[in-house]
Length: 538
Image (cartoon, rainbow, N blue to C red; front, side, top):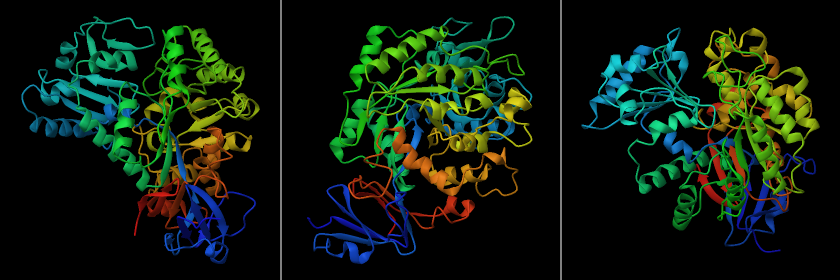
């Protein structure tokens, strides 16, 4: 056997493989794991060219995989001022005034991450924007859910928006009783009308920002991500970054399929599956069967307390089913955003009839925010992956159900919130992730929140549905073994074993033993992708 390129020693190595018990050393050659054991086991693989890293008291695990991110779309969604920490209208006004103080003539105020709870009992309109900066400055604010936005009167005028419009997908330019736009834009098509007139960002700037995002993800232990987008410039960005060096992490893209897609559009998505680079590939398609509960655009069995969330994102849901069936028949793994109970049921029923190709990734449903009892076992029964984001629960809902999400649903449906433990206990595959930039991407906090059902570091906060807490091992598996199973990669990734990819993450604490609040703040000592170091805290 050739000598190792890299040997790593740690206080504990969690292989998540039953064939190994208590190893403390891992050897890597040509991107693969070639030995797992103690220091004596790997000693014969050491040579003058071998890099050796001793993590001391650290713990080594399989590389973490984020189940749901928007790395390229996120460049659009995170342009401008971060409003995610704004908690009330006074804070929003102050943020807008600060942004205005730096504007040149004719520039826009841009912001992102705005939580609708900021508005309290007031309707979500552009009135606070006008109160803060006047009606002549164009303002475009992305709401935290990435499914809605606020535009000022000047922004609407520049986009030629002066009343309601009809779209192929369920989208709405919200208007008052007189047909005057309120500034609230629901879903992608309505938001796109204003986005179309936003000033363009240069390719160099987008490339630099994307690299910063991916480097930041690697620094917190992420070795791969399921990218729920493939924007028009995604391929160009990937090629440009790989021309400059290796990506800090792997990316698996799923381009969108939207209502109105004809056979030519579906064939284009199939053709896109050929696109790939050294550490990225297109492998899947992203559907949305509904929107969000916070925005009133989810698909529920019964209306929410505002009388909303009663219709799917696809005006004719059978068209979604036909498109999904067609693409699955061409070997494309299916991903469906489904949040409301009716949406999840329809997506499950559709995916159950679309068996994946042999050896391919499993079909999957994203988010699954309110789930009736009868649907819980269906994920395991139909081998559909549940892809969920614990911080959507812990950051945006409250145990007393006074938040916008819970109050819209009412107690019965809010009590069925984010049923991660029930899905696991029923034998389902559960992939965990962030949905960045909707929520922060740090997997340490996400794994902690999954165990706590409250924000990490805030013990004073009452947990939301604590019976849904995951164990520490379940939380880690959601980022490793279950993530690999979801991608159809259980034979090559997700475990530390000979022959597996050397995608590895090292924690300063033991993620299976440390208190979750401590895990959330513990340093990441090392991240490797294919045995190459993408982050190392020396």
